[in-house]
Image (tube, rainbow, N blue to C red; front, side, top):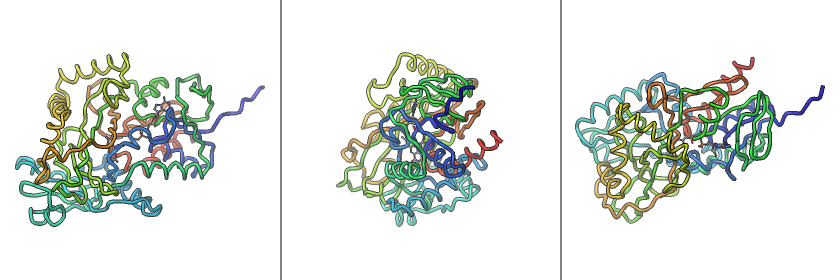
Length: 404
Ligand SMILES: Cc1cc2nc3c(=O)[nH]c(=O)nc-3n(C[C@H](O)[C@H](O)[C@H](O)COP(=O)(O)OP(=O)(O)OC[C@H]3O[C@@H](n4cnc5c(N)ncnc54)[C@H](O)[C@@H]3O)c2cc1C
């Protein structure tokens, strides 16, 4: 019998933070041949290199959820990782402030959630808040989260990829997954690749790869663009760490916030605008006819059912499209902000939000599903960057259980 050698034991689709950490974990743990493919010319070109860089502490997530567990551990592990490699961190922590009295109930709910998740938090009065973030404003109380830190995500991505390569992971860039070609083969822009096991970490396209394997067919990805502004360096507003609003806990978005990056820049954002193309970074670029039709279908359905308060999310987000609307959202968090303080910010990122088509609900927890000889990471939304190191171990443990 003719035996055709396999291209690799594990084929990982996507060189974002999830694909790279899983590939590295597989290689380190089992010494197997792992190949990561990505359609771009460099790693971390999408969400992983374009996010806010906040290492979340684990305040928001429902106790016992996968997000809560992996975020708390991931925060500690990623901070240690950065310290060990000399990657700069801003470790001034974060405050969550209220803009009206009605938000105090949700603030206390966050305090309870954080404590249940094992996160160190403190309720502050106005004087204590002033000590930590002199320019933050709040009504009554604020929450202080010491462990929240900020990194430059691109530095982290470069470092992770370099270490994975050093440990023997192979990367094939400008290599696009184009389809499933039978039991153990995929079609790519660089020809057919054969594998023993496939791990799908394709971010905004992860549902398409999963569907080709007959997995996760009730899900689709809905893209939301996060736009950022930069605070004018001469502004009267000074930010030391992070200033966040109390989010609407029914929605998956945290709201526009101020983040002081390790290089001294302060960003404001991100917004969360529903899009008609998965990579619609600006204007109509990245919009395809089929995506557009699918997205219109989702939006109409969500709008008419008002699921997850979709209309109010959409309306709030539409207002943030203009600089003026964005300014109105941001000024509730700090004293002394003027519209001229908002400068064009860093490049936007797009959130690959999973929607359950059977219920039309936005899925909140991480989702990992399996096919035969394949595993699919389907909802690696925030805080997946923070959680990536323990998340990779979690996924590799699932794979191990499956193949044993
Ligand atoms: C605006 C914004 C702000 C965020 N802020 C934070 C934050 O502060 N803290 C935090 O923890 N998380 C944050 N997140 C979330 C975090 O960035 C993501 O959860 C994480 O980066 C997801 O990583 P990933 O590897 O799954 O996806 P990606 O980084 O998108 O990687 C997927 C990769 O798959 C590749 N790919 C896709 N299709 C194909 C194909 N057909 N063939 C080959 N390759 C393909 C893409 O090119 C891409 O490189 C934020 C996200 C956004 C959008």
